[in-house]
Image (cartoon, rainbow, N blue to C red):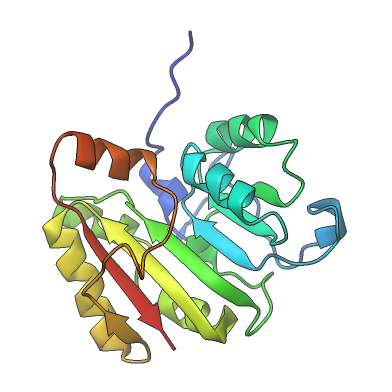
Length: 211
């Protein structure tokens, strides 16, 4: 059985504008989407899962929200192909091969009700911090596409990354940050990583950000 590579070369995590040469098999740059080619009702997504990984959370979210279009975005092409093969019966869910560091121009202003950024790669080493996509540029995009009553859901099992998220959110200073999270305000399916943390009794940290 062929093993799926978890990480790509450094260039794949950077925006195209920061690269001297675009590497082979770099995700396509997308300015517009024809949603009729993506969702059966032809409408844009109501929710997006940034970095949808192997797609368990994305699939379960689609099942419990059959009337909502949900878009997963993932950098690793092999993961995207496997997800879309697995969920092809779910006509309201789709995984897109794309690098979110290039912006979300194909999503319209004030249209997304929920955004998920769950258990991203921590990139521990300082020299790898540039690969972290959670930055002011991304927060500007999330604020632009989020509806006035919308929310961004963030989770990590790494406390240092949790602090980094909070620092960037306070630097951005345009979201109301909720840190006291319980099952009532986090009524979402589990990700693979969350389940693993609970099975191994490992702490994880969650934030909800509202406009």
